[in-house]
Amino acid sequence: MHGDPMMWVAGVRALYLQALHPRAVRGVMQNSDFRRDAWGRLMRTANFVGTISYGTTEAAERAGARVRKIHRMLSATDPDTGERYGVDEPELLLWVHCAEIDSYVQVARRSGFPLTDAQVDRYIGEHRVSARLVGLDPDAVPADQEEMAAYFEKVRPELAVGSEAREVDDFLLRPPTHPLLVPAREVLWRRVAHLAYAALPPYAHELYGRPAPKSDTVTRQLRVTGTLLRCVPARLRWQLPPKHILRAMSRLGPGSRPAPYKLGR
Image (cartoon, rainbow, N blue to C red; front, side, top):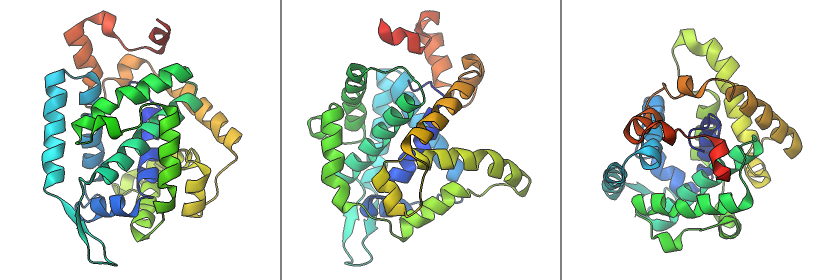
């Protein structure tokens, strides 16, 4: 599933969703200049996901240890109360985790990636390992769709759109780029950003205050986009950095090539 090209759209959806938690997004904004190093940050995230998906157990454990070490050193301040808190608070890590996994599942399924309910439950359950790697207690992390839905229902009253979320929204629509690439950004990137935003749950649209097409329209758009992107040969897509899939295939052999048809086995 993580080798599917629609995961890039899912990643942008996750950023939109994660920004709705004021304490979580504040931790990001106060500890990084994401506007100056946006693509570097994106690639570091992609590298982490690729490592824990396709790397060895040892590589995944090392990647998790690096993330935990960095998080332990970072904190943020609530401008209203003056409270200082660590970005590695379990509730913040859990929100980031669930927003990411939910985005992967929702975009994949709605774009036509073949996943049964049982497979989605297994996927969510397997990601308790990735939750452990970033510092969470796996037993406190949703293990299936029912638990994930209950988590989002519980956390919704805490969500809001503050100045930090507005800045993330503006950045995702107009990320800084070289002047010569602005036309390409307007034609290609904005379509990705708009589609990722449209794929958010209705309550997120309400909070951001920007309407989105009807759900069935968005699903059709996701399916068309997924169909087009999947027409690009996988080997060509996998040449893009960080090339985790190609390294895994080299290590494990050609039979390890990831493909949706293997889900039914």
